[in-house]
Amino acid sequence: MTMQTVSLNRSFGGTQGVYKHASSATGTEMTFSVYVPPHPDGAKLPVVWYLSGLTCTHANVTEKGDFRAACAELGLIFVAPDTSPRGADVPGDADNAYDFGLGAGFYVDATQEPYARNYRMWTYVTEELPELVAAQFPIDGSRQSILGHSMGGHGALTIALRHPDRYRAGSAFAPIVAPSQVPWGIKALGGYLGDDKAAWRKHDAVSLIEDGARFSEFLVDYGDADNFLTEQLRPELLQRACETAGIPLTLRRQPGYDHSYYFISTFMADHLRWHATRLKV
Image 1 (cartoon, one colour):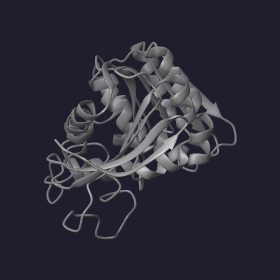
Image 2 (cartoon, rainbow, N blue to C red):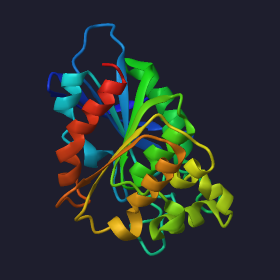
Image 3 (cartoon, helix red, strand yellow):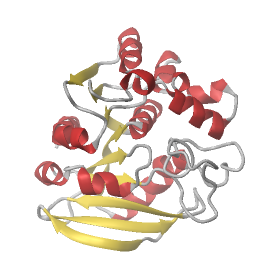
Image 4 (cartoon, one colour):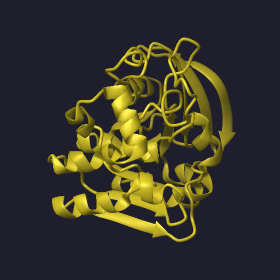
């Protein structure tokens, strides 16, 4: 697989790059960003995968996430993919809704038309992009972790639960923990996967835990001023599921914080240090 460099900038002694490539998973051109911290020649570094939320691209966290200083200090590679396929021929939402279609892939492989051909974000972020990144960057594949925000928090939790041997740590900012039970998730899972609720459970963190999936531990932050907290995020459902299953969960309520990157950037370095400890940096 080949990729094209869109931009490359020096930052905190490392390099922040933006790249694009032709994706076989989505049938489109995909863009992603990678920060590589300063490191000795020949060294292999741990990698943190970051999944973004609704309406976002790779650029939101790359430009507003404030992760580079911590990654440079801790020696972490930071990878941020896009949230959906894009292109003139890619179906979006007829009403241009922010919560379905373009910018809202929900990290699933769609089975319903007209989305099944392009909306294969599960395969993209768990198989194709990791293979490409591993071939192009100095990654230690035995030291990986994953985090995300909102829809991306949903993706991070479900991917960690379904690949517990791949990721040493999993965390999230304001995740959608039970998409089968909230409007955002019901719309997305129904639109991409159809009416089969059994298929939904494989992309629902609370359902996965109820069905026996396990992970070493989670860190989750949310703001108590988040407008989406009570209707869409429902962190108490994750807390209840983890308590029942015996999964260690650090669930932190951050007073006065909302759903924005002001919130994410405030606690990003804290999350990265938590990941680094578990990646044994």
